[in-house]
Image (cartoon, rainbow, N blue to C red; front, side, top):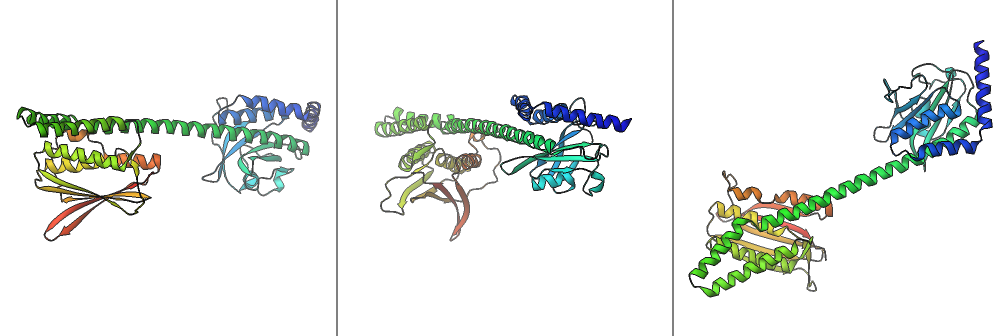
Length: 402
C-alpha cells in the first residue's frame, strides 16, 4: 500500500510539472522573488516554492561563507521547516565535503539516485534515498546551494534538474542585486558619516583657530597699544589680526589651501602670538624650492595651524622663554615638507589650562584626512642634540595637490 502511494505521488508530481509549463514556473518564481529585498526572505521564499511548485517533500538552502569556506543552512521547508523561520541545529558543511560541499566547490549540479551507495552523503534530520543538489551561481560566483532530498530511490529527473537550475540562476541574480544594493547603501552611509566628520573637523578647527583666549588676548594686546597712543604698532597688529580672521573665515568651506597663503597665515598667527606672549619667543620662516619652475603648491587645509598652536601653547604654558622656532618649508612637485626645530619641551606637565581641552586632537585630524582623502600625511618627532642643548625637530610631510 505504501509503495503504491509513493508511486501515485510520483506520477501526480510529474503530471503537475508537465501540465504547468517551464516558462510558467519560472515566471512564478521570478514574480515571487521580485519584491524581496532581504536575503533571508529570498531564501525562505525559494525553499517554500520548491515544495509548492516543484512537488518536492524536502528543500534546504545553504549559503556559502566566502571567508570561512563553510556552507551554512539558511532556510528549509519540509520535515525540518520551523514555524518562525529559525533553524535549530542547523547543519554546516565545509566546502568540498559531502554532496552539497562538492557541488558548491565545482559549481556543477548533481542528481544522486541512491544516496546509500554514495559515500559523500551526509545525513541531516533523516536518511533519504535520493538527492538533487544545484549551485546558486551567477558569473562563476557560487553564492550557495539548493539541496533537495526524497525518501524514494531515483525520484529526481533531468526535468527537475533543468527546472531547479533555472530557478537557482534567478535566485543568484537576485542575491547579487540585493548584496550590491546593500553594499551601495553601506557605502552611502559611510560617505555621509565621513562628510559629517569632515564638517565637524572643520568646525572644530575653526573653533580652535578662533580660540577665545587667543582672540581676546590678541585684542587686549592691541588695545594696550591704542591706550598707550602707540598708533603705528596698534594699526599694524590690528591689520594683522583682521587679515588672519578673514583668512580663517574664507577657508571654512575649502579643503585645500595655497602654500604661499598658508605661510602668510602662519606669519600673521605667530606675529600675534608673539605679541600676546610679550615677545617670549622668536621665529624664522624659510621657503626652499627643490624645483626652479615650481610656481605654486597646494596643501590640505587646517593642518599647519593646529601643529603650531599645539607647539606654541605647550611651550608658553611651560614658560620656555627665549624660545626660537626655526621653520623651513621644502616644496617639490609631489610634496611639501615642513621642518620645525625648537627647544625640547617638558611633556610631563599637569594641570593644563582649560582651553587646552578644546584644542583639536591633531593626530585624529590627520588620520581622518588620510582615511577619507588618501593624503598619506606623515608626522615625525625626533630629538636633536646640538652641543649641550637638546632640540625637538618635528617633520610634517604633506602632499602637493597642485
